[in-house]
Image 1 (spheres, rainbow, N blue to C red):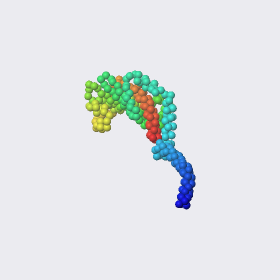
Image 2 (image 1 turned 180 degrees about the vertical axis):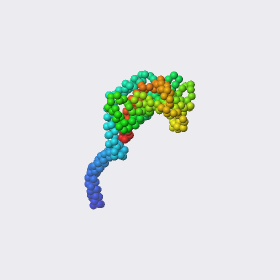
Image 3 (image 1 turned 135 degrees about the horizontal axis):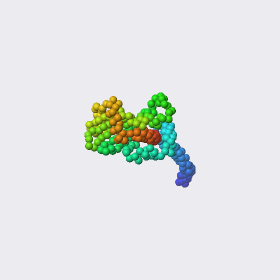
Image 4 (image 1 turned 90 degrees about the horizontal axis):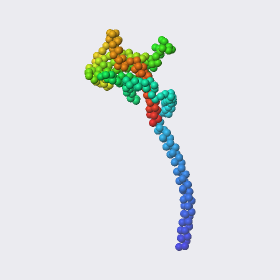
Length: 268
């Protein structure tokens, strides 16, 4: 019995001696194994966030930088300009026309009352870009002369006139250029809604109607009286000078807004 007990004690002591070092070294192995994965996971997470910021495209970062440079240049160019330029302030103080300008739209509407008449003017700033793309050789004659107008490019302007006590509407299509309105056509619509409604359906219906002769084919005396009739309603030189100035003003604001919107989209 004493021999067996001695053998059991010897076996137990050997087991404890072998187990103890293992118990002491185990925490060191665990700590070493845990440190490396934590560092790699942090790096992977940072890389993932950075990659997601610019979608999957390889050109996103460069495009964003170019848009930012252009945006900065444009903002610096207008930094010293007043929020409301003097020409616009003067136009509003006259109290004749009300400006209806929707952010993001390329069309501008001016409205006014004249007696029992409601007058609406519409023009588009898109005509500025079309004029800039025209060849320069058309301006060779008199080039460099000081008498050249500041805004010589044409802008289409359309007027509609309705009366509260009369049916129908009169629409006048003009070209605004060099401080004057050149009338192309004067049409009459028996249905005022058809003549003034801004829908694709109404536009399609108008195409099938007789809109009147070309203005320059009318008798000269009739042309002169129509021009006087139009000018009396505020469709005159002052308005013709305002339209190109406001077109440039709005086009600049829309361009800056476009740069900012595209840049934010690319970076999302």
